[in-house]
Image (tube, rainbow over all chains, first blue to last red; front, side, top):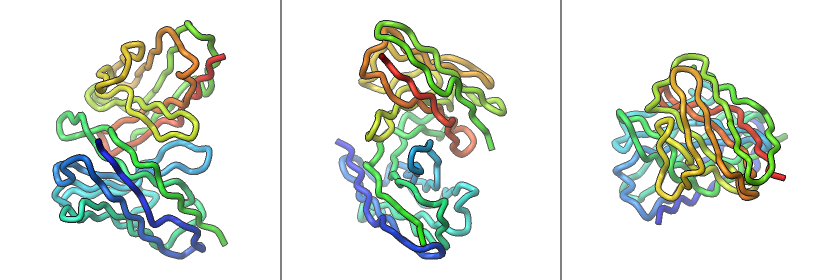
Length: 122
Length: 107
C-alpha cells in the first residue's frame, strides 16, 4: 500500500522559511516523479512543484518560482520542499503527491498524503 | 498557462439522478492529459478519471468522462448520497493546472 506522510508544517512569519518533508513507502520511490500540491483553506488545488525520478526534470508554479526548492533523496525514499520568503498567500495545506497512469511521460496524481499545514501570519 | 473553468459552481440533485459537470480549457488539451478528482469533506482528493475517459482500478463505472479540445465532461449516473463532494478537473499536458471545482450536493 502506498503511504505518503508529510511533516514540517507550522506557523511562520512573513519572510520566514520552512522545510517540508515527505516519507514515502509501499512503492519503488525512485521509479516515480513526485510533486507538492497545496490547498488554501476552503479553496481549490494548486500544483506547487514537481521533480522527476532522476532529479533532472524539475518544475515550479510561477507563484513560487525563485522562493521554493523541491528535492528528493531516493536512498531515503523522501521528498522535500524548502520554502523561503514566505508570504501570507502561501498559507495552505501542502500535499505530497505521487503520479501514475502516465501517457507520453505525462501523468495525473494517483496517491496523496494527508497533508501538512503551513500558516504564514504576523 | 492553461486555465480551466468548471461549471456549474454548485449542483444540487437527488439520489438516483444523473449529474453532468463541465470543464472548459482556455486552449486545446490533449485527451490523453485531462483528469478528474473527487474530494469529500475532510478527505484528500481521489483520482476518478484520467486520459479523459479512463478509470483507475476501483472506480465505479457510474463515473465516466468524455470530451476533446477545450470542452470536457464528467458524468455521474445513479447518484448516491456518498457522491456529495467537490469535483476538480486537471490538465497535465502543459505542467499542471486545476479547475476551481464544482460542488455536488446530493439531497
